[in-house]
Length: 226
Image (cartoon, rainbow, N blue to C red; front, side, top):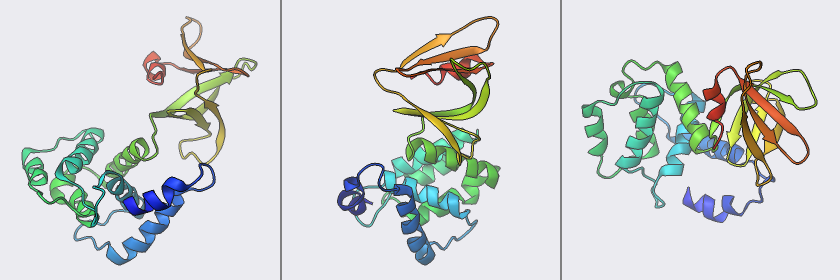
């Protein structure tokens, strides 16, 4: 959406406008008129997320199209997350789309029998959500970890979401109730802490308060260090 980005969204002051709500409005208006699936119909939320990914990766010219390389990129990520493989026939068909695809063609392509094959709709939905979070919401890592501040003895399980400048934690993975956030800036120090008597841990040393986040697997913690 180059026009909307240039003249509206890029001028919005951060924190005063929820871009996703605006995107949802645009999706609702355009999908009602144009989304006519020829095969399997995607759930509305999945179709919306793919529509956002299409707009993000499409060329900056009208009418919007996604070139074959970008289509292959998204499909390959879907296959990777669902632990499937893109066959040579499917890859050949994607690369043969010389003039690219429209968003409606792209939505039909994702749900075509050749692409879905043995992938369930539930698995596909989870994969779409993961890719949307990674590319659109800039999520680097997420998952359950145990957390405590240095002044408290109790460990609390939280759902952590790591973005480039902030580590937020929620009651559960639906992210409806945020319990707090930790700013990741030049004053934040991250240290790996290992001790036989406790879980493998990460210490987040901040100016005002220190946190320790832990998991039974050291690999889970180390994946949060970027």
